[in-house]
Every structure is written in C-alpha cells, then in structure tokens.
Amino acid sequence: MSISLYDVSVPVFIRSLTNLARLLRKADYQASLKGYPAALLLQSRLYPDMYELSRQVIRAAEIATDGVKTLAGVAITRYDEPVITMEQHITRVNYAISYLISLPPRQLTEDLDKTYLIPPRNEEHYSALGYILFYLLPNFHFHITTAYNILRHNGVDIGKQDYLGTTKPEDNDWPDLGAFI
Image (cartoon, rainbow, N blue to C red; front, side, top):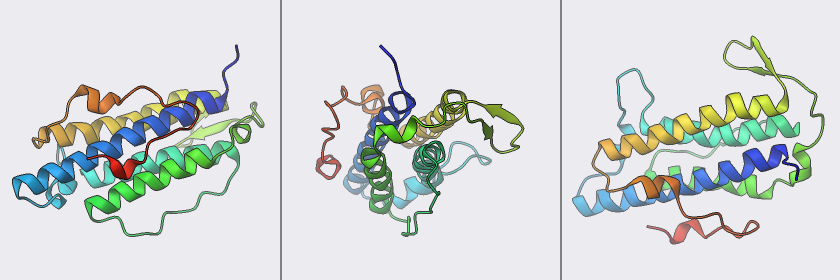
C-alpha cells in the first residue's frame, strides 16, 4: 500500500477544520445562551504575545489552503471577505474545507523531488513530504489546538472529543457543517 501527499495532508486538514467549525458553532451558541457577545471570544488570547482566537482560526484555514496550493503549484489567492463575526469565521473555515474537498488528489502527486523553503526565514529546504510533515501539519495543528484552548480557557463547554471529532466520513461524504450547533 502506498500513501500519497494528498493522503497525509488534505483529509487531515478537512477533518480538523470540520471540527474547528463545530467548535466555533458551539462557542457561538453557548455565548448567546450565557448572554455575552461571541466577539469577546474572538478577541481572547492565552497570553499577550499570542494571536487572539480570530487570528488562530484564520491562520489554520490559511495554512491548510495555502500549503496545499503551494504543493499543487496553484497561485495563492487571498480570501477577500470580511472575517469579523463568529459566523464569518465559520464561513471562512467552511470556505477552506470546500476548497480542499474540491482538490483532485492527482494535483498533489506531481514533482515529488521539488524542494520547499520553510518560512519565515526560508533557510530550511524540504521535499514535498518533509514540507507537509515538518511544517504544514505541525503549524496547522498548533493553531487548531490554540483555538481549542482559548475556547476552553474562556469557559466554552467543549472537551477532547469535540477537538478530535467523529470518525472520518467515507469518501468525501462530509457533513453539512451548517447543521451543527
């Protein structure tokens, strides 16, 4: 059995972003039940020199889509819609998921010997697999985990299973994210 660049990246991104969208929906719902604006959560951070929740969510979505676009040789375009409210953050995450679902697996099989420079200093060179394993996935999971931790720290009633999510749906049979609260 062989494993492809697609296999080690895109399904992982989709699952974690799906779980992030569910976490944000739960946070929005719980904020409304407790009578405070969800925007307070979006402005929260764990430590003064860390990104706030809003930026953690946006970075996770960017890392997944921009990283895959880099590997696929597709020009990186910016998401131009405003991302201010909780619903707009959920929409941003769903936009990333939609892009990842639409990506044909064969787009990540070309030029496996190409090397990639790791930001921010662009001093480390990695193969495509190294770029995924040593830069994209750890960086992505850092922002997803930090977003989860900010929500927990602020009293949102979520747990480990919310972070991990459910088992992987079969062959791109991903759930309608708008249905989750």
